Every structure is written in C-alpha cells, then in structure tokens.
Length: 147
Image (tube, rainbow, N blue to C red):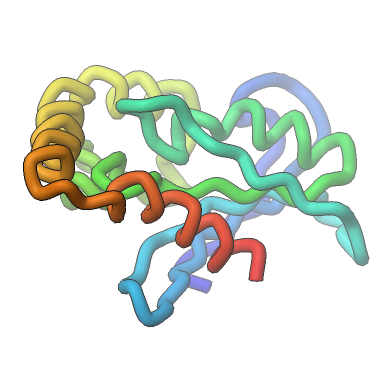
C-alpha cells in the first residue's frame, strides 16, 4: 500500500469509503492502482473500472465511490500512455489521496492535451512499427490486476 485514506462524501454525500493507492509490480513493469471499498469490507465482488481514452484512473473516482458504497471493491488503473503512466503525477501538482476529489479531477482534465499527445504518439509508433503490443498492453495489465 502506497497510501490509504478513509473519506466520506468526496463526490457526493454518503457513507465513508476506504481509498487506497497500491503499487502493482510485475514482469512488464509497475503502475499504481486506485482502490475504493466499503470501510466494513470482508469478502466482496470486485469491479475493474476502466477510464475512457485520454482520461485517468482518478477520472473514474466518483463512479468508484458509488460502487464502494454498494458494497463492491472498485479498482482502477491508468491504461498505458494515460494518467501517471504518460506523465509524472499526471501533470498535476498533487496526486495524493488527500487531494482526491472533484477539484483534482478537474485539474487532471485541464492537463489532458499533453497526455493525449503522448498517447497518440505511442499509437502512431505502434502502427508504424507494426506492433500489436499497443493493443495487448491494456489486456495484459488488466489480467495482472485481476490476478
């Protein structure tokens, strides 16, 4: 665990949610996970929450909070060439859990253009190189998270 925080009502009023930032390391590298779960969590189903192109795991935090309040473990990670994996700190000043909330999501969204350029450059390189790796990276990472 890199960081943990119990917080209620980050995005809307309601029960507190346990937020965690985890570091997943495997043969293909390492990346951070954002996890939201009920504070009274025993055994529960997990939901892998994927962000849209150009966004980041933090962009999905509001949906994650809703799933956690319904009793699920919600897990998100940045796809390759997105969020923290595109730029250190996703281009924002504070990417800690203590800063998580609507203003952080808004700040991340405002720095979307430079991250999208990194993503599109990687996409074009993959197309020029004839590499299918670009498409497979997200599936490999999702399998590592599920495992």
